[in-house]
View: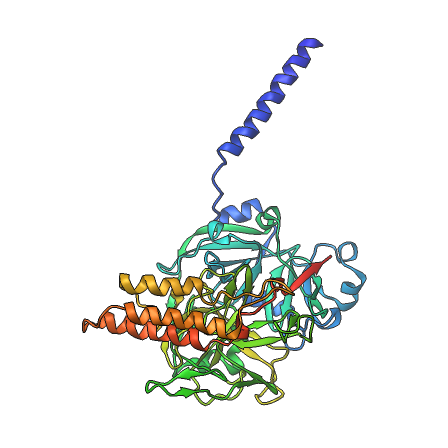
Length: 501
């Protein structure tokens, strides 16, 4: 008996040693092709992403976050009677198909603007997979070289949900309250567990993204003459796709900008329904003290919209998303007008603090195309609250005139870098803590400007000097004209919502 025990202990030691060695030297991730995937997952039926979306049905008026009745999802199960809730059974919000989809990766979350989402496209349609962070490590997509990979997604066990007419695959529905106390209900959530992600999303072979104007191009190209391809009755079939917008123009709305002759122009705001919207701006949807800093504890407003001449707001651990309006339609009045797109950028992205391009700058943008709307039968006007949105994967995917010069001018760039690091830096840290006065802030900026003018490189007649001079003049104008209240934010405004079980 003692001998058997010794043998058992030895065997257990070998098992634990093997586990330890596997941890130290993990086996490579398995890469699947069609044959290997089906061999490991027998019985699955392949359907296109377009057919998957068709299972959901209409997205119009089914993606409101106001409650369970108006926020539709489809739950993929094997046995509805055992797995579904009474509510799901009554609504018939379930499907028993044992499906999988296969698509090319068209997104990259390395710079943080795409967050916990993987977008894939299979030639018929695109869809968002709500997963976890660091996806570029396991599911790479190099948008510079267009090298990508296939992924396989097992649908059973997931939830196909609608958020303001954007469909995605994710985990169970969630409820939350934002800091203003408004109830929110979401049709699905992220698969935060890496174990669960690996149970549903399988890496495939390398591939290359195609680009062009063919309907099945992985990167679809539009310009000022063809943008209606992705609008109107065509909108929904292009949602979630990677689009290259050629020759888009930056449009300031309700926000001042300097003309070439030095005069200041402030165009009319764009209307979202009956509400005025300004661009570029940062937007806080959390509760905020509107009349800071003189009377802390004053009135609370749910939405704070301020001019902000940067891609997004990111200072002292406070991160808020930014919006820049890009357009093919100079005469647009409403955000829902065709040819008008809001470039949304996260305060957590690596490029959040970069300066926005000037009004009128033209450029090319490679971005994920989406919409934020409750319904699809809007025709424009004061009852239309829809917005077309685009999200870049990388700062390199937004190439505009008058952006930061690519050729370094050392004496100049060091001074501008100092300004970027130190302005604005007047975050309101907590209620009751003194902040700089208007006069003090103006003095600080004036001192920086004086030093800059006294030390900037002399005009050497080069194109590089002219490019840097135009850029530096823009930074000076931004520092002098960004409203003071864009600097003063409560420290606690970091997240819009706190999820509850």
